[in-house]
Length: 197
Image (cartoon, rainbow, N blue to C red; front, side, top):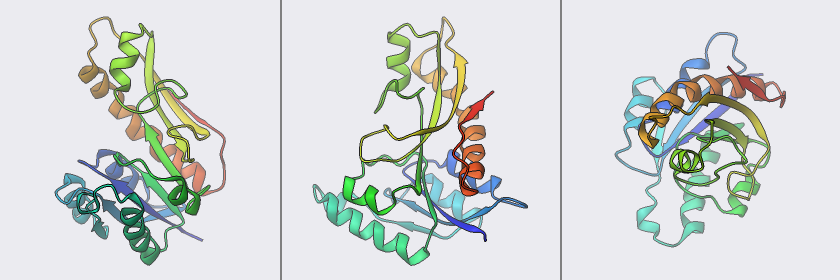
């Protein structure tokens, strides 16, 4: 059985593109939907170009009503019946109630070596701490922010002249390798961590 994957984005969708391009041939899953909370997110056009159905649930009209936003998001997801939901640069913190609906079926990519540096500004925090290396992690989404079981990591050294921007640029290709590798393994029920390189 081929599994269906919905991908949630907020921006340009580079990780979404890597995931979609990987789901071909013998891959056990196929993309069924790309959703953004930002109407003009560049990733929506990329998804359309790749032939993937798209939708948008703009979070702004909901204001502080997170439950209302998530209800609208859930309705769209349910209409497309995904087996797996991949967060790929989706910049909204989801409530425990929403996460519970997708327990064991939702993945996220995070730009740090978890459990270090949950949340934002990960590259700046790694540099400020004097860390020798940085990287990215793919984890299962749980109610606690960036705290679910880690299913894959990629590491690279922090260079003496690195800035948060240069570090982000150097890590991005590793994200594009790691997330598809984890998804492929996850889709066949294998939770053994993927370690790159």
